[in-house]
Length: 315
Image (cartoon, rainbow, N blue to C red; front, side):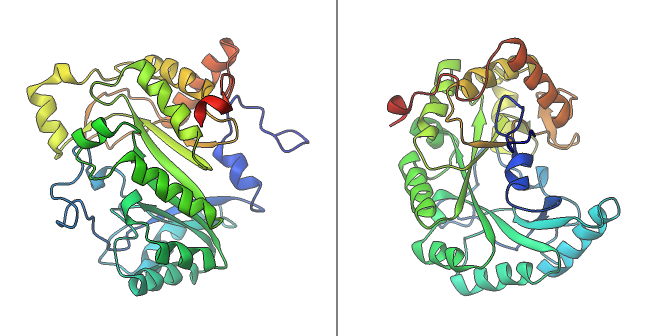
């Protein structure tokens, strides 16, 4: 960052976002709060989203058999060896972390905030599980809170094919109600879904830019084991035009970023599922290496986030 506090990167990065809000290093620590998913337990549907396997993003120290306190202590012990002064955001990541009665949510979240070194919460959830009572409670907490919504796509047709069980209108409503309460709002989006063209992926940036989103997490579509999508992929691989090369995905991201509102923070661009669960695409490239690749291609192409952003078009 330069003396004005602005990043030299051609996009707004998450490290700078945290640095503007906290003194010293802050990192997320995943925790499994023991919540379920309404798209699995019959509340909304059964079987879950076609691409989803929670094992792909749950660290080994996270177990609902352990208390929230115990999981955070284990996570702190792991990272604290290298960064003894690190502080943390408790990241309720697995499943749907507002899918429970408010008294239970209150108990889990406040237990996390009582752990030494925890300075805030990140709550991963679905747009259709954000009741006003929950949002009012989160807004009342004397701690930094990020509400992270799995939007995945702005296309209702694709949402239906993914068995998401919600519409983009529901996502937009949840984001707006969250932002109205002053809660930091994040969104998650998958690029490269079956039948999605490059032009449609770029259009996602325009539609999301119209929402009061603070943070955006992106990743390429991955086929992982033990999911309905994996079974369909085995039968119809031609239905899944995956990004076989990271360079191809980077080129799509450049178009996406050029149309994205310039003040949205980009927390993530890719995801790499565990090797024993990942079917395709298998890049063998770590996330930080991909970010370097993307940054280089943006610089070479004299492109940057928001370069083609049109506020009128996004409304």
